[in-house]
Every structure is written in C-alpha cells, then in structure tokens.
Image (cartoon, rainbow, N blue to C red):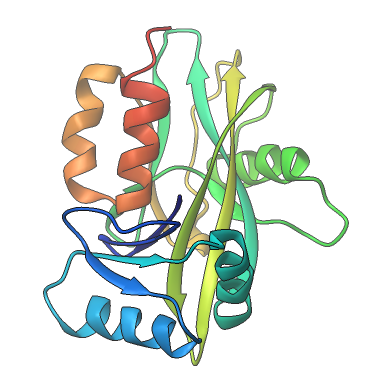
Length: 200
C-alpha cells in the first residue's frame, strides 16, 4: 500500500478497502480530486483509494501530482544522539532536492553537510522512502529517499540560515518524542520506525 502524507493527514492507495478510512474506488483522475477536496476542506483524516490494479493507479497519481525528488539523512553521532533541524518553526530531518545526474546517496550526504555545516559523514544503509503532497499552483508529490549516516567528527553543527533553518542540534532518544509533537506526519512516522523503534 502506498502512503502519502498531506500535512498531517493521510492518503493511501491499495488494492482493497481499509477500515477507519473514507474509501474511494478509483475510476478516473477525478477520484484524486475528490480525495484532495476531502483532505483539504473537511475534517476527514484518512482517505483511501482502492483498485485491483493499485500500481497502475500509482502511475496515474504521479501524472496528477508531479514527482519532485529529494534525499536526506538520519544522522547518529558517537554518543548515539540524532541530528534534527528546526525549519519554519517545525522539527525536521536534514534533506534537500536531488540535483540533475546526482545519486540519492550523494544528495543525502551533500544536503546534510550543507544544511548542518558538518562533514566526516559515513553513509550507512538505505532507511526508507517517504511521500508527501504539497500544492503550489498544482499538486506536487515530494519523494524523499532517506539514509542512515554516522558522524564521527567533533564540529558543532550550524544552521543554514538561507534555507530558513533556525536550529540544528543533537538529541538523545529520550528527548525525541517531545520534538515529535511539533513536526510533520511523515517525519513523525519515519522517526518512530527508524530511530525510536531501532534497538541499536
């Protein structure tokens, strides 16, 4: 099942109906328009679009909401603390757009370096992909590839002000749940799965 965050609400695409969601059977692109109308203009929290050929629907959705690719890092230091940024008043993880002909891995490392002013990063395993939608004259699907990273340096991170980053800091696991009260839905889920539920 594909899971797309729309602010703190959820749009999913799958083969069958699901419980605890408003279910819409896919017919044409107007199904997407109906889903977003419900998400943006009502109190409905979860819209689910279903069809036996869910991958075909996913392809059509990417024609409806233009994909924009980014990459970012889940960065842990030698003290087992994790790197978070605060941008536009919300806690986030460092990430940014993938440049032309750039790999997701290279983009993830570059963006962490640029947004947090640190180097000496060791790229680890691929973590996850998150999807969220935003509207700017048309709908865009932000596709973010996340990678685990380790930082063995000692330099204090600094926020990239021109990217509207206000704070960059390291946080221990016990401090992270408080941050998650003021973040995005996709970051909350990613952090839960990749940091808080990670026993390492």
